[in-house]
Length: 182
Length: 319
Image (cartoon, rainbow over all chains, first blue to last red; front, side, top):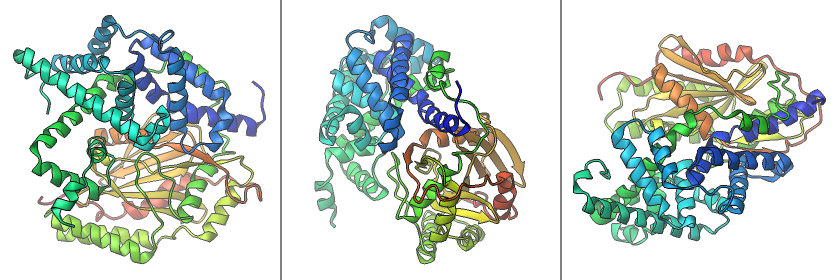
């Protein structure tokens, strides 16, 4: 592609600003979609849209928030179709590939199973805050809700997870040490 | 305020904020005191924290995976690993401008950094030493040496109007600048104590001074990148210090610390990850095109005052 040094440099910077968030975007996409290939489809769709709309960056408070808003919007559009793949097989694959340690593998599987039982809005909020460490203000902006709504989703979702965990421990006392909550 | 009043004001949002590490130190302490008095709430909060940890573990290896070529290609449409620093100065420039203008742009860290005058700095230095002393971990000689480091930094030029116009001159002609929040390395126990620009002759850098609870200091240096990117992390030693350096987009970064190489490599990864960026138009842009400054000299000139003394660290000695 031919461009002047300055044009190339500025484009280069747009590309860098966007690409440096790829890992975070992949992590959140993987959590939402689970299937690694479809998750990367989501990230690719997000990045391509971001590049198309790169001039919006000038008015954004945070590049990361802007990208996550795009990712989340793209995800909502395809949640039931293009990016829908949260099957048991995928869950198994996700946890077994990621955690060689058996205890951690069980723990991961347990929490991901519990997450899958949550309503989508709670799951999406918890993954965003827990995995990416974004501020509540940013998270609310990314998800397009008020902070109070975000708090409510976090609170209800976490309590539901805790109850699922407690009930799993009651039903399988022999697994208690493997699923211990610190 | 009485304990009762504080406890009455602890809301569910505070508890969620505690779980997610989003409270300021004062509120965090109040929530901790509240949790000590409320075992059921404490158990609930601990369970939520464990959930967060389990979720992070479940996806932590995504960061270790190579990024698929199709994703790299999506943003590579215009990327060249260019050495041309046309835009590069703007990065540090913008942050300095903001610092002088009444506070850095802060992102997720929520940490407000305001420009400090000498009195404030002295006060902060004193309070840091006092805090360390209260925790019983300070060593008299080390206290003194920590102070002397801060004193040395204090003598370096503050970010001033004059600097701003110089910086704008250098940034002039660029389309826009970048702001970034200071790196968050609280995961390793370090909190930001002081931020200032170091300027010696024509070289300049942002020096961020961090300290942990024991008063051990660590320096992060940010300079505009002038050379081709070097994504790998280099490690070197000087006196008793380990130095890691790498480049990240428009910046070159260095961490100087007594911590070991493995820890510093992890820290370097966290530094990059914790910095978020935004764009802004530099003030008075376009006045004079800036000349690239040879910042190969920065490492020697700006680190030398830090490295020449063995009085920086307070890590050795009885706890």
